Length: 62
Image (cartoon, rainbow, N blue to C red; front, side):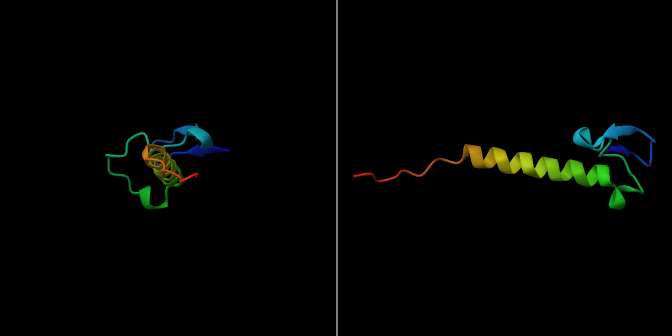
């Protein structure tokens, strides 16, 4: 599915969606699916990185 930035009328595919100008004011941001998808993707990536960086628990195998 292709998403459209309401402010700049830019089209982008859903799998590449992220806000291109997150530091600029945007009156559409609170209802913006592109902003939401990008945030979820960042959270998922951060959670994946923190899980990968955690030390593994040692197991006692006697």
